[in-house]
Length: 438
Picture (cartoon, one colour):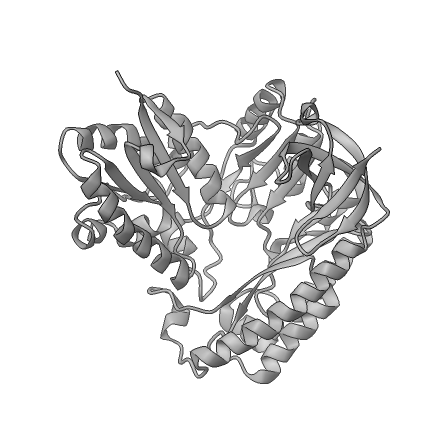
């Protein structure tokens, strides 16, 4: 009997990457092995993102392409999950008749049963919301993307309701996992050889705030640091309004906590930040940035920016550009604003044309490319401790990440994969560093 094969495509953030890893693990128990070749797949699952209009349109275009594959492969199962599925629901089955199943962000645990239904000739859609603590208990167990670094979900959902963001509507309200479960999972991972964990949530900084019996996020980090075998800790994503002094102190006091943080500003103008309902001012954001730089000199800061938000003037945009220069981000995830149905910003009047937005985005990207290269060049000659994660793109190379999160390519034996090595940085490029093994 031939083995059934699953091909998985993931769109969007690390939360989705983590969900996809868990889906692959769960479906292995139902007889599906993971394949990276779509041509040999018996089932294709798309784990989607709807934060931006462009990301959602990309999914729809992909589904159109899969129609041809469905005609060629009798019995091929096509499913769509994640935020697009949660937002659109049964509409997707009507719009794309060749799609067999639709599963929302709270329904991963139902996948084996849903696929059994599809294998018996019926289409199925499940997008019900579970907006209580039970949904964390139903979340399927997963496995590491590789042996040495692992995502660990510590919370789900978001209560911030930024005016442009659809996440609370497709991921639900904020719920924190019990700290005992988080630590137990990390202890199991450490025992299996994992040495780095990445703590995940829509807003990890607010972990435990709704549960008086749970630790705060800074306290959770200290608990994770005490787990034997864990050598590095990272986390994403942070909200500036919840970046507490206690959390910033962790960067000064816990060597295992990497000197890297993703702290999205989204805009540099107070007027725009207020319309976005971000809950902080430009001055408050810079105060947190400066406190982080004092706590961990050399800390690498990345962020997100939205260009062309409704009402954004040229002066507003120049304030964003000035903020980027002042913070000196190592990298930025920057996008032209696209209205998401159901959000408050979708009802705001847009005065900028698409061309004006794209022109501003290009100016921002040009600035950020310069800053990224300057920061990468500043690492030349330094010694960095690198966790070797796999083979590099070129023959004879291995690749890993430094404490800063920067990718470092090294000429070294593949047997070093999984090890921490000291590397002197010999060259720097736009997207990576090159190092020599010491």
